[in-house]
Length: 541
Ligand code: TRP
Image 1 (cartoon, protein in one colour):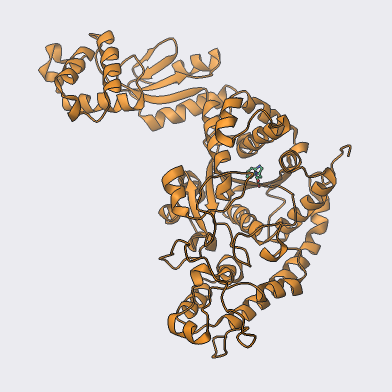
Image 2 (cartoon, protein in one colour):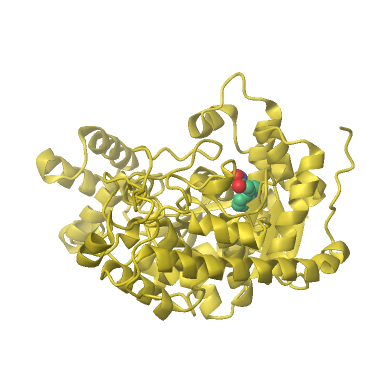
């Protein structure tokens, strides 16, 4: 496929490239670049335009972590992980570890049935299925409440598209016997959980996170608490590491869900040095002085709050890594505590525990402990043991004991015509329902990272990192075959692989993929009918 044929369209005199956006961030590695073109902003808006021009900003500005850093800990990583298509995560380690050790874990994602499922959605289907195959409990949901409230879809449209999403998910290998499918509106337990979570969030917060205002309708807000419940749903029976595979536009939801998971906990475990509470910065300061000062130098060999206060006062502010406010607040607390000894301890703060749970905790803390009105201090428990105990007591006393949910983020695919892939622009994407011949044609008509002329292409090599067609290979067509993906990349950038042949090969593979996928969809149709999910909305129109 890498012959000497000229680039396509050269006879017609048309340009051979897509005029790719030269301002796009250069890719230094052998990686596909899902965000080649696009605006220069990195706002993450779940209901807005979701293009990301520079994935690095997501690490710096939003605290998403690089997936490469956990890759080593993942057993049999999926090709989307190996190829950097899954580029980021939040707190994925507990999930990787659970998969590694055959411990309980879960995966969940949701789909708004606003149109046909396309090859971008396939990434998420694959991520769910892969986690299921690695032993995680798998959940996929139809976000019908969100589609209706945030996108104005009618229930008829929703029903039609929902079926299509589910058929593709099953056709790609989701195991119905092991996994669970549901639609938001028909899941009573989910709605109950949404209600509980809603009590921990308020409008100002929605305003800050999502830009909601006085015009935002209440159903839209309800769809947000519903999504929070979706994300925590796999933990209803027992807490477990749970991963939510999504595009980075969903990160605001993930962050809020992590917060809510925490707010629902009975106890907050922290480290303390005396009976009073310290902010994180203050605690670091006290910890530092606790390490520096030798108790033997004080009366009765005991380091007391006043001693630390004195030592702090003798230290110039410029030598401390905190501001004047923090210093003065710590000093006040230390001085008020006076002769109280400074002793490191693990604290269980009572956030929303029942009286029984609080009593049970006091009972369960081993070794020396001290009980206060709103907290218990344990002197012989380390942080990890305390976290475990807090969760155990909570669950035994009827609490959820949620673990903060984790997430992984995949790159958005570039549209076949350049720009972003969008369900509303048919030529930009390939629907999983497209006639295989149309799929073939769309690939043949796609823009590429090829050079102006065959000669220049051979000389300089193609720009695979900016090529929607190379992306098709990396994200889908090469499947699990890394060598094939790499060969396409190397041949392209080395100038041997010209766009005409490359697209022909990709187009044929796409046609085969669609034929095969659609055949499988027919095969699983019966399974879906038998599945425990409502396919029709019992709604008034
Ligand atoms: N909001 C998601 C979207 O726009 C759909 C969704 C609903 C979802 N609930 C979810 C995604 C839970 C992940 C997890 O596509």
